[in-house]
Length: 113
Length: 112
Image (cartoon, rainbow over all chains, first blue to last red; front, side, top):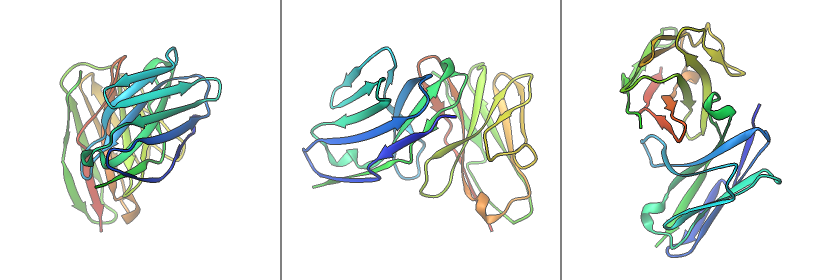
């Protein structure tokens, strides 16, 4: 089955700086890669996703890049703000949605004022 | 999109008992998924539930411990059987569209 590795487990950055979280996956059949933000006591919220036919996607301060050959994808957050503090999870899914998501272990992002 | 509700939102149970969690989706969906999130951990897929067929369980999860029902295209239940403190987790119901995966609000289970 799929295995998703996520690094780092904790990331502390100064407000206004950029944050990068990296994930690798093992199953070359995976074709959908979402990123979720989870605040304490809440359900995961999708913040951005990318499919295997696209190399990069951007939505305002958030971007995701995908390298299919190397089987890794990354989340980039620019101009970080205090409200970006949360746990971020990457995930991978194959088979057009017939499979559930396999999640990375999560990154606790801390924005220092 | 899909709006998912779960009942109960939280419960405190005694060891050895069972709890059934209900999941309701506001539209008909083919796939429903159940995840577990242990304290401070990531989400782990328990099983996939399709209407009209047996649920498919992931490695480490068995039907006797986590029986699932899927009586129609908008509803599913997950039972946590013969509970122990290690079952204390948040259990989340989920479904997907071709474009996105949606999660319910979760059921926070504490086993004493």
